[in-house]
Length: 282
Image (cartoon, rainbow, N blue to C red; front, side):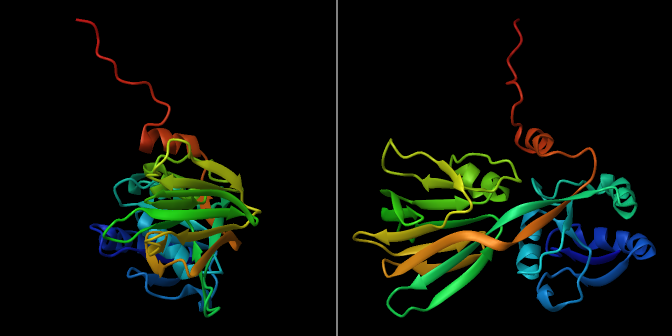
């Protein structure tokens, strides 16, 4: 088995944990590269079977950006705070690796999004690949932003507020969840669409097929906004821009070993579906 070993060296404990596991990994696999700064473009590197990512969910997002349009399945070790995607604790890693090297694992495939930001005056366009979400939000000072959303050329809504999020199922438990959006099962082929602080009582989040194309425009007296992909890439936009979101031609792979499930992670990380802690009667 051929491996990339990736991680965020700025996070406490990552470098030490990687150094601790490297001898074991070299005994059982061929390590193609170790990148703890996550600066390398992996799309031109020799192709690996798996990418081991040490850190938190942010390290996974960076790994997905590094791999670009040549995604490699990720085995993620949580050295962060929440670790919703990086759900393997270092104490569980030995047992997980034994199963992986024995071939006892599966790779789940997850929707990624492709965002095309076009300047309608010049015709120039920028295409960005994302794993979590596109968020269009107002720039400081935070005036009300007016947003129009089309789905397959049909106007769905026009509203004023702080912005709009279009997320993948993987990204539904990130910015989208904090904005009151729906949690999507991770292997769904759908996008979540969630307004950010809409100035209306009638606009609620919706879920729509990923086979459709979504177009966002800003308008009104203060149309300046930021289009932010995965909380990392920021592009200033205005009423002169058209933002198109569609299914990416590649998917993100996540390594799963027996005994781990999406709903278990929801319960463990977000306390989803657990009973409230009532006070006992005196």
